[in-house]
Image (cartoon, rainbow, N blue to C red; front, side, top):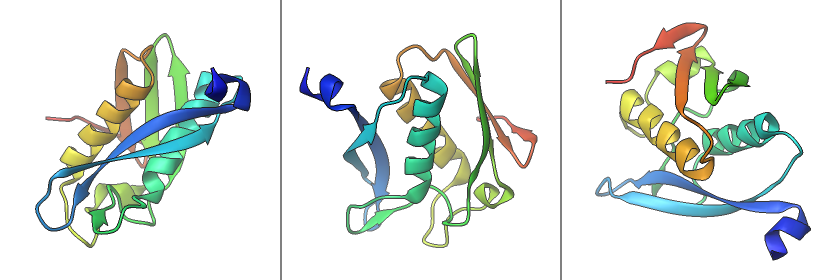
Length: 127
């Protein structure tokens, strides 16, 4: 109840440990808006900023940006900048990181059925 009235919502993010690749879960408080689309944008932008936990790898290069996000009929159309097509310099796998972002969105927003990723306007199919 406190979070609801405070205007913030608790969200979880998964990143990976630099040394052994194990999952590192971070919890952050994000400002709640009156629109699920705005809440989704905040979540994705926060994930793009990367981890705050020491020795954790970012999911995407720091240059990667959210170009657009559209939410319709329980489907998200998420377009990232072309920098997202490259693994971060610290290492990682682009498809694994996209899947991690997808899982995080679905875990934090239960009303999402599907996420369609695009990078620089080109559809990305996850394996």
